[in-house]
Length: 491
Image (cartoon, rainbow, N blue to C red):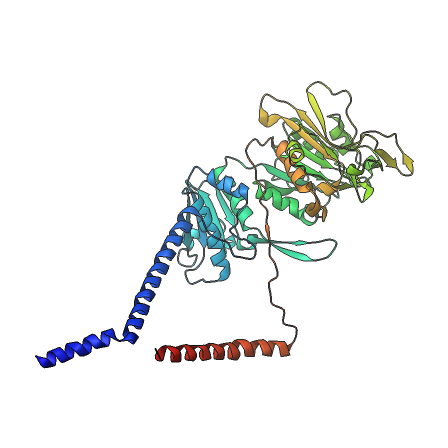
C-alpha cells in the first residue's frame, strides 16, 4: 500500500514538475496551431477553388484578369470543356502557372470544366481534336458541349515576341489570357468574321509590319489570313468578309478588279490604307474600285496649323485628329478621352453630294485651318479628312456594303505609336464597324514578361554568395538552435 502511495506521489510529482507543465503547454499549443493551420489551408483552398479568390504574387500578375475577361467568362451560359495535354509525369513551373490560370476560369463559371489528357496514354482521344502533329505537350484544347467548335492553343501560342523598330529590344509577351478568352468567344459563338490581307501588288507585308494588329484581331475572335486573288483559288470571298489593302504599289489586273467589284457589291467589307508617298496614278483599277462608291484619296500630305496645338504632336505633320463623336468606330474613344497620333497623313477627298443610298462619314479630321502640302505648294486652309467610311444599306444585313479609308499606315503598323496612343483601339473599332459587330468584343491586355534573372557580375561575387548561402547562414541557424536549446534545458 505504501509502495503504491509512493509510486503515485512520484508520478504526481513528475507531472507537477515545472518542466513537464511547460512542455505540456507547448505541446497543446503546438497541436492547436497545427490544427488551425490545417483548417485555414482547407478553408482558403475551398474559397480559391469555388470563388476564384486568390492573391497573385507572380511578377506578371498571371491570374489578375482583365475586366473584359471576367465579363466574357461570367456570360458563358453553355458547357465549355477545356483539356490540357500533359503527361502525368510532367511537372514544371509553366504547367503550374497554366493550371492556376485555368482553375480561375473554372472557378468563375461552373459551365467551364478542366481536365488533363495524357497524350502518351490516350493518343486516340487527343487526335480526335485535330492534327496530331499540332497536338504538342502543353497545348490546350477548348470545345463546346457537342464538340462542333474546337479551338487549339499551342504551347508556343502562350507567348509572342515584339521587337521595337527603334530600340531593337525584343520583348516577351505572356498572352495566354487573351488566347483563352478568345477561345471562349469562339467555341460559344455561331460564327467568326473573316479578315484577309490582300497580297500580290506590293502591299505591306502584314506578317512583318502588322503583327500586333493581327494578334489583336485574333484575340477578339477574328479569323485572319492573307489572300492572293490570282493564286489562292481555294479561297472564295463571301458577303461579310473583310479585305484589307495596305498601301499597294502595283495595280489590280482586270480579272482581279472584276472579282473585287463583284464581291464588294454583294456585301463585302473593305479597309483601304494608302500612304502619302505612294504614286496613286499607277493604281488605276484600285482607284476605279473606290470611285464606284464616290470615294477617293487626294494628293500630298496634311500639315496642321501651328496654332492648333491640340491637333499635332512634336511637329505639324504628326497629327492628333479630331474624332467623330457619333460614329460607332470613334464614339467610345471620344467618351474615354482617347487620342490618336498619325504622322504623314494623305488627305481623303470629302464627298459633297452623295448618291442615293450611300452614307458617308468623316470619322477623323484635322483642325479647321490645316493645309495639304503638295511638294512646296500649300493648298487652301480648311478641315482635312484623315479617315472616312461609306455605308450602303441592304434589307439583308449581311449584304450591306461597308468601306473604310485611312490616309496613314501608322494606325495599323508595328511602331512605338501603338504604345503611346490609342491607334490600335481605333483600328480594332473600325474592324468591328466593318463587320457590324453588335455583341461585346474584348481587347485583353497581354502581360510583359520581365527579365528577373539575377545578374552576378564576376566569379568572386559568385563564390561569396555561395559561401554565405551554403556555409554562413546554416551555421548561424545552428548556433541559434543551440542557444535556444540550452535556455530551455535550464527551465
